[in-house]
Amino acid sequence: MVFIFSLVYYITMQKEYERLIELRETLGITQSEMAKGIGVSKQYFSRVEKGKTELSKHKVIELCSKYQVSLNWLLKDIGNVFIKDGDKPRVRVKILQITVG
Image (tube, rainbow, N blue to C red; front, side):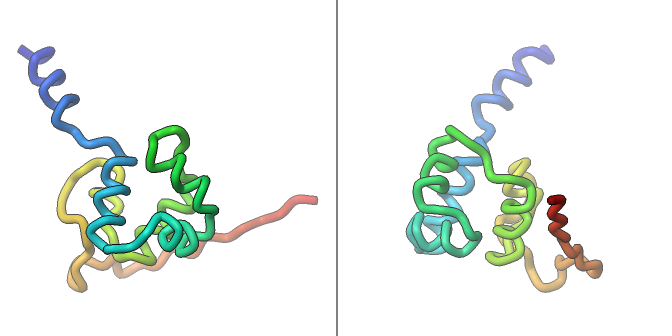
């Protein structure tokens, strides 16, 4: 019984890169525009949308912040696509980049 449920869940579950395509199309923007918006090349973003590579955690957070997208939806297909004003977290996360040379 558990096996059947897991198989059905796997088949119906959208993959992250498919949700990225859905998001981009919903926003009505091109791959180039979204790639530029999060600071990656169009070629790299195209590979992400094909499932050949993944966005870094930093870029995923940047994408969610820029386009007001729910991280839960993007990563796990849980909840609504977009964050409503009332759903915004009260704590801001600042990402630091440290270069060791």
